[in-house]
Length: 103
Length: 503
Image: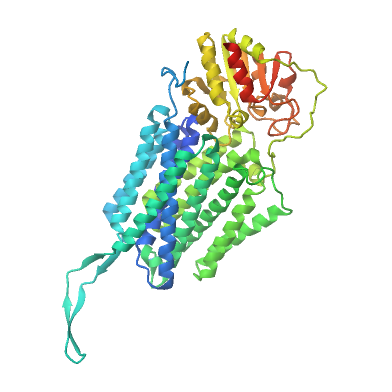
């Protein structure tokens, strides 16, 4: 892919992001942050490539270890981010359901 | 630039699907009913991206089509003849196992943290997660710099010019996200005072460092020596610290949103380097999401983004500011008075602020609302965008206390109702109900949108004492109104007493 096609994808995605995020209800802004946190860890793709590469020589080996460390960090974020988002979203309930602990 | 990066078309397609899943994940958040499905889309997208990468870049070596067959003869001699093999892939299982272990370590830390974290500590957690994205971006950029061939961004040891710019920007944004988020975390977690720390001449220093980073990124295109790359990284770590240290506690919601945005741009920059559509789409989504949230937060405080970045607003509690106007008359009420007034009301609007969360009063507050509803009182909650420590924080805290989300309203949707409301019940909030924001041009919060609680028939204001003032350190005229009754006590204790009085 040449630079211009990639740039086009990027610019279009910024616009999509703009409209999608404005449609998010303010009540869910905290889960929004948690989930964007999780998905921005898609950077794990780069970390996996680095970890899987054949480390030739000193810099190659360092590169691999940096990659593995990045895999750990990104995984914390992916699993933690999605789990905490799910936990928060499960709390949002509608009126008709009687609240727990109601006397 | 005469280069093309060989990309597997099926992999590109899979990354595109992952990107679309991420868009659907955010789209799902438009309402609480579709939000859980949205989150699942996010997980599916991430799984697709990770599995695709693992398949395409499975650790191992492609054994070439040329080989030699050698016979070891007696006497140490060998005779060889060249052979042509069909190319075959030799998987490197030990590396694959290392990757799996890395994922499992991260997953267990992440899941345990997500389960244990208190909802009041969500801003710290998000800041900590941002710092991890930032550091991961720095590490990936570093790995790509050290082994560019593995990423297909170099030929004969020379990294492509375009990739150098992307890599330089990626590592810079990642490093700023990391060090900035660490400071934000320390401030939100209380390890570091919320008071802004002002270095002399900091604007000059910051601008010089920023210019230095940009200059080095430009120079990096000419010279790919390691010192250039690592100096960019070091300076970016420094600017992250310098930028966030002077920003006060009151502005943290903006900072957290801003760092959210940065973590997105860092991912996008790495996506450019790796020509990966999933990363580019995600980076753009997250980048714009954080930017919009920062804008919403700034608007809610009537502050310009520049003035927030410049820093220096708001301390820890504004506390200690000696009772500004104890000479003005005010009325004190008891829990019984409050219970009576509310039970007679047709509609009560509760305005919660962060003080409620600090006192852990949200659960007993919901109990109070339940009792009132049994008496036929209509109860609504009014939430200011900056009521918590991050966007939407108060909504989560109320949801955790089992407050139904359809009883919770945003500022614009409920503000006109105060005039027809019998009781406005303010708990742990102050600046967001201060009419000075509308009337007093000299007030530091002038122009900030506020709730018109003074229009309600009666205002019940829970406050620890008459001494302290709000986050912004401003006195509030609502305290001294004829129709205001001050309930001076710890928020949780007071609400417990009201619940008791309601019977």
